[in-house]
Length: 275
Image 1 (cartoon, rainbow, N blue to C red):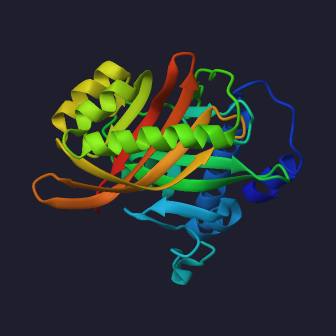
Image 2 (cartoon, rainbow, N blue to C red):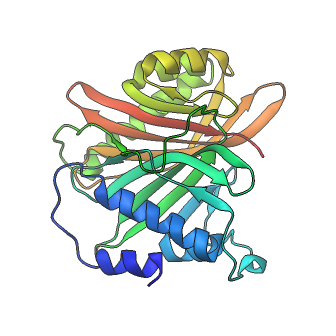
């Protein structure tokens, strides 16, 4: 049985789970990676991507429409990855994973980021996939435990969460157009992950402060979409990003907001530069 078939068989019916249990996400991500390694990128995307899934290429584009038919071969992909950090909504319907990715003959490349959504029939499909070539001197070992995002605070509903986070995104975008670091830092959680290309990945607010201070001073964020969990405790946001770093650059951003006792915080943030 292929990785895709195995996952679909295991998730055809929603299972009871503890609050913020990342096990289904880790299982889905590993099955996606195994399918891709065995049958190629196109096969992996078709088996695990939602119909509305997007990839950062570097702008957000349709994942399924971006597939090159010439790559429909039985050969496996040289791309390999594994989850090292994951977070799940209290409602068990939205989550993400991130971790190191590799090329078979080149070794470590950077860290990927995948956002997953559970369909009404209980099957997990990813809705966003993108990665950044961050520096990591010691990528997590294959047999290491996956770090979990701390549980969120009880919330209300997805509609309310979208309204609140949409306003926060607008405020952040307005301020980031002048000074991105000053706009982002007040919203970065103490245990957040922040990824910027060609830089050491930041874990925690202090590391993020150092990283953002070295990055471009102004970023124009243009939101494309926001997706909230049914519990209203987790919101995924992504869109276009424009900045000037030794020349005009156009790419994309993606971030995860989580509701905690003291409000909404960014727990994951990445910027994907032009290729």
